[in-house]
Amino acid sequence: EVQLVESGGGLVQPGGSLRLSCAGSGFTFRSSWMGWVRQAPGRGLEWVAKINPDGSEKYYGDSVEGRFTVSRDNPRNSLYLQVNSLREEDTAVYYCTRDQVWGQGTPLTVSS
Amino acid sequence: DIQMTQSPSTLSASVGDRVTITCRASQSTSIWLAWYQQKPGKPPKALIYKASNLESGVPSRFSGSGSGTEFTLTINSLQPDDFATYYCQNYNGPFGQGTKVEIK
Image (cartoon, rainbow over all chains, first blue to last red; front, side):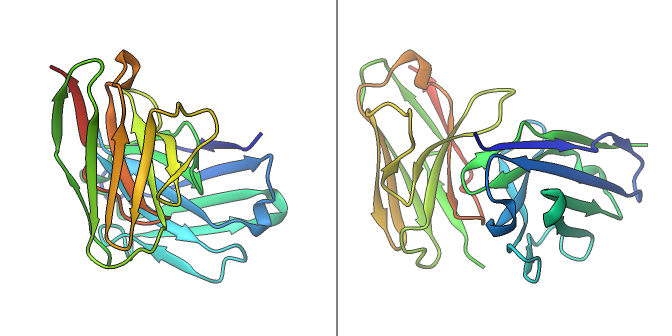
């Protein structure tokens, strides 16, 4: 069974940084495009970033370009999202995705 | 960048109704489109992949069609469990704004 488990969310002050993690299992991680999606409270789904299997191609949504960095560690079956220069509008549940499979999400709150 | 536009934003319907949700892409996405259902407090659940293929375990009253820039999700004979919010997504890319299906 394909499983994705996110971790690393929490409460951060504006301007702060955090690294979100996602552990994948039940599939060939090193062969899979992986991504991050977020959902702010009461809002719709927003695509955040995606990365190709070997990590050489990375793409970002306009609202996070230049502040967030997606990366992966294939031997550890892990996906990461480094989030910097955080703003209150980055408050959301962050989901790790592989094709149409999603994790349960990790909440990130940006507040002073 | 591709933009996805979904309509309507809200849909009021009754149990047993047939409902259709439309998703338009600003440029061709071929068949690389997925549909999701989301209920409050839960992650989205995939319904349709590659525009018209039903995910395993999804009831057959759900169907998807379209290619290029125009796509539809149809729910035949709406059931109580179907009242939720639905999203389209260009694979690993942008989402539509969502359609909330409410009880009439």
